[in-house]
Length: 84
View (cartoon, rainbow, N blue to C red):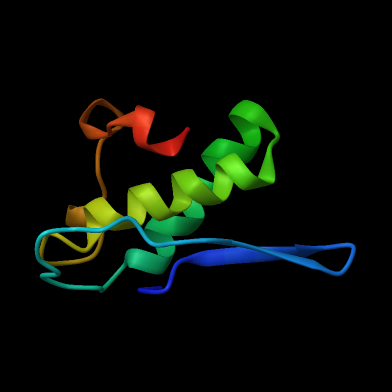
């Protein structure tokens, strides 16, 4: 969501802020886009922190366009350095 995402590990809460965008157009599908990015990160690197950052990043692209599936970014459109 607009506050980012996080996870708890052994009593420690790890929070990752949302990626700032110039303008939010439509949040429809942002959660689905986050999950897709998160799963991609887990499959590629197996690192939950990086996967959450990737989920936040992919969702940030989604909310800048109108619609759900049409707003999902292509892999080639994503600035992956922002997830490191």
